[in-house]
Image 1 (tube, rainbow, N blue to C red):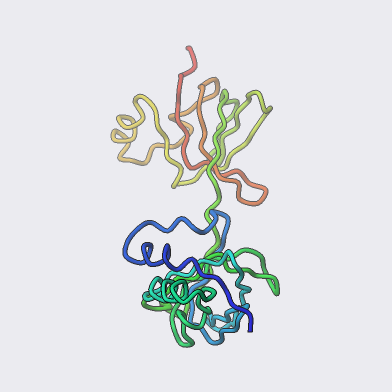
Image 2 (cartoon, rainbow, N blue to C red):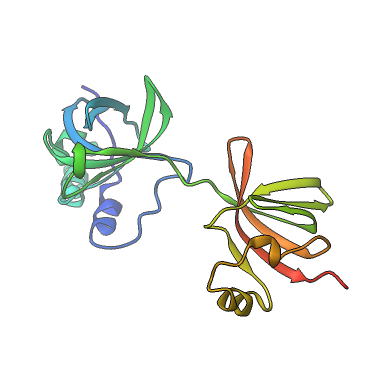
Length: 215
């Protein structure tokens, strides 16, 4: 049976409180209960589905006792411990992974106290935030359009879009917190928009007014 090298000495430090930085920001996570372990894979029941992840030399395991197992193997001149030495069937884990379908590879396996409500879940990575700057050319009830070096760009806005700028807080307070977006931002204003790409849509998380249009 093949053996899987686990970065257990580092994993032990992570377990007692250091921030976990092993998984890529693009990795997805699945939380569930371990149903099967082999030398090259781990199967986790996530809600009602079984998800099988490949493990390799780059897979990091965070579990109590992992560091001890790693040191014992090193002292004996043996390869690192097998996955089943530190993670057990029936244990709740969080798996950070890449890929999909039959080609999912675990970058990190972390023991957790519980699989959570419903027996676990899959979480997608949050979209990265980008920034665009330019001059407002149009404002609608649910969008704002800029003209700039990248051409015209239209961003969706909603109740969660934060507006920042001189006088914005005062105007919002005077209106009871219910001032329409287009009453505070107008054509000709210079703005910086923080946004996330969501499919074919660019959603504005923040619009910062850097200069008001000259009247």
